[in-house]
Image (tube, rainbow, N blue to C red; front, side, top):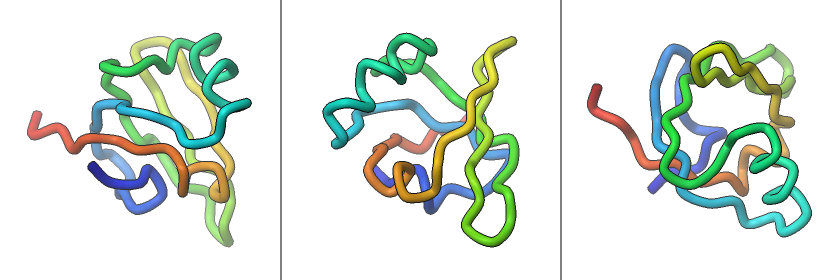
Length: 76
């Protein structure tokens, strides 16, 4: 299990958990629930947000929040 903030662009990973209580509900509303696979599309330079996709869904996550979102690396 690794922090979302350390995964490189164009990498897929399985969402495991978020350690920010208020953010869990927001992520779930956007479809980011435990067990879903997300692709890191891009990381905006200079500590900008990470852009993630799951099929047609795209979301942006702040770098400081990504430190507390945990993923399991996907070998696919």
